[in-house]
Image 1 (cartoon, rainbow over the protein chains, first blue to last red):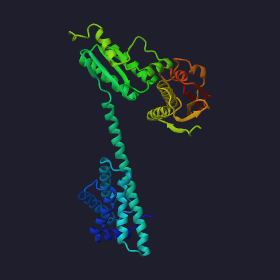
Image 2: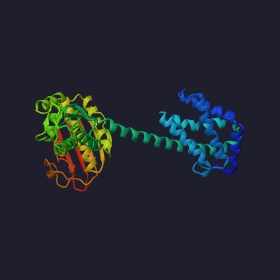
Image 3: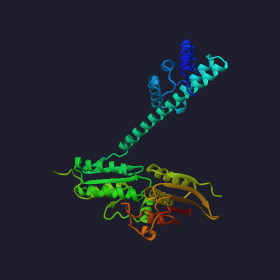
Image 4: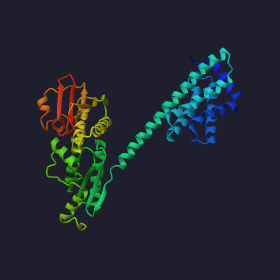
Length: 279
Length: 134
């Protein structure tokens, strides 16, 4: 049930006539749901912009949100939903900002049948606008989540210098392929940069060591060895040790220790690491 | 008095993590010892990944069971993938078709108390594992 051109322009006229009252009513309605998390002035400005865009789209005779006449409206809606998504408003609170225009218009439309009928059509136009906003909101949120996941990947894989000639990688959380790759790259680069002959991979923060995790660790160790560095795996707790045995994973001749302190002591006891390496 | 099971889709790496977290939560709830928790979580991780990698995705269902004397956890992994043609070979340590260590399936069997596998080439695979409280 699309709005006909006459109906659209009639609504545009109606919106123009009652501009101040409607913007006020609309803002009130939105302010109610947002409970003071946006200032009244800012909200008023947003609503007024949106109101104008709605009015323009209707004046242009837009029958649906995807028409050319509604381009400005779409831009406004995108801006609004981007802002709401970034400021952490819920999807509900964002959608209400659009739906509230219906309540406002209903108050001034009168109650004869013809007016109500065309209101239903306006209503479906507003629904479309709200759906558009919703979709945009979700897309922005998804973008945020993807960004955060990437940041987390960066954050969660530090390589720290523990002693002269000893670097350590404290692994925390789930070691999937992507993270394992980052860990390996960081570790190998740090080995080169610091000229360290020893690396300690600490898995205290890894809740479960399954074959995939073990394989990733083994590959990292082999790669480090190829570069001439010795790797020690630390943080093997009793339950992890028993699980590894039951799984049948073999760490071969790789030194493993229960704690990071043990691993450091082991490295320091080996000659050469105590003093800075002479080059 | 077993509670209704919780079913999770296994369609991505994130789902494997989710299965693992659910299994850990349930394992803690039925008071499995720390070692058994870790073993069960690891087994679940292996099998969920197998479901994903070899079965092309499927689901996992976690439920608590009670045989009158002891409580336990039962997990079912099911997929509608290609199935396993030679089960004995697949259960051999070190055998892999996917570039892994070849210990997932055989290792998972050693980590749990009961291990049941129903599979046939072209018919998908259903694995049921149970771990009892000591």
